[in-house]
Image 1 (tube, rainbow, N blue to C red):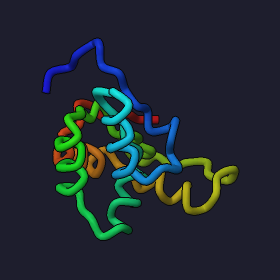
Image 2: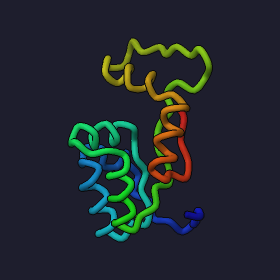
Image 3: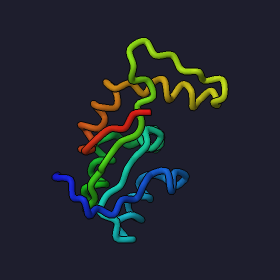
Image 4: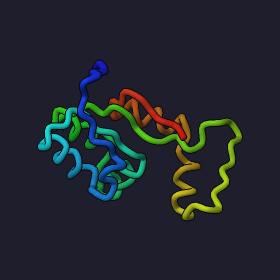
Length: 117
């Protein structure tokens, strides 16, 4: 879908503790027109036994756009993160978020963009 500057976006960071499918429905019910997702949302959906196609369908059924998927944690070739200050699981997740992985997930989900950090 084309980018619409007037989108009302429910940013994933504002409600990261809410399960993604529940958040999609809440966004629709509250009048949002788009959402963002974190890669942790994809992991939560997969833990619930669903896949990317299910997530994409939920977004479409709610009439929402997925503006962006966050975040590429390892976007420079050979990049090593200083992860001493991060919980181990978060460090592993960030370093596993390669451009190849996230761009493929974004394509499947229909995201308009991917964010890096």
